[in-house]
Length: 310
Image (cartoon, rainbow, N blue to C red; front, side):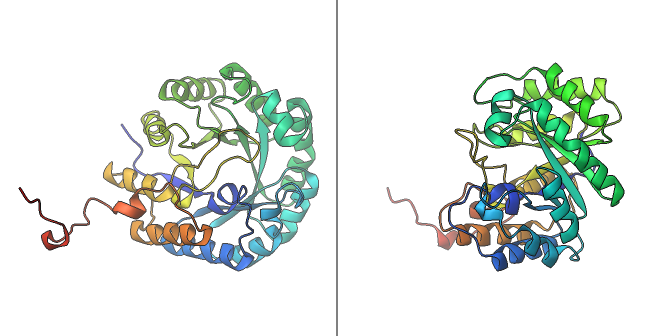
């Protein structure tokens, strides 16, 4: 019923940190990525080569990539345009990710261009990726619903995937940018894309804004999808979408998959330590649950609890 193994891409140092107002030192970002690699995470979306004016938190993208590119995991980065792609290639990323919104309103607020313009901007990036032997993937944001327009037509998402496929892209991440996904919508959208484009590879990226993040993962698993994105401690949220809250938590996801008998290759206890370190660095409580309660195998002595008196 479920895949035997699942590939998790950690997005904490990109999607997780991008909205943080206080700059996280470059050395701490590198430390987080090293901790993730030591925990067994094999794919890390490390940063984004966007304009430092737009996202000051990621102004150190090149320094971060140069420091972690030889650790072992596949290091990928978001690139908004050809200029960003050139910087990413120079820094030594293994893969690049372009970003397209599924709604015109979100495309305008997030990219300052229409969907057509955004897709046109991908063409030179695709040529650069091909000429340098880099894998180019695409994220489709607000694929499960737009905070400005409401439901997004699955046919529209499929058309976007088709146009990007014509540029050579075969790997797509469907982004639940503001947590509007539901199991029924996950089934409808993934089913449509699988029918229309059977040769593409799907990754699902859920937020837990309305508490359905892991339930949506379970729906994806039932559909046979074996690739997911998440962030340590549940950090994150799109800075250009009202109401967006954290990504699903990597450690919570790893635990759920382990309880289902699904392999991830990630050491759960090591991942919990990374999540706690992330929370300590940010300086406020983050939404991860497992880093507080621990797995169900973690028992407590009777003497550690207060006895009822009656």
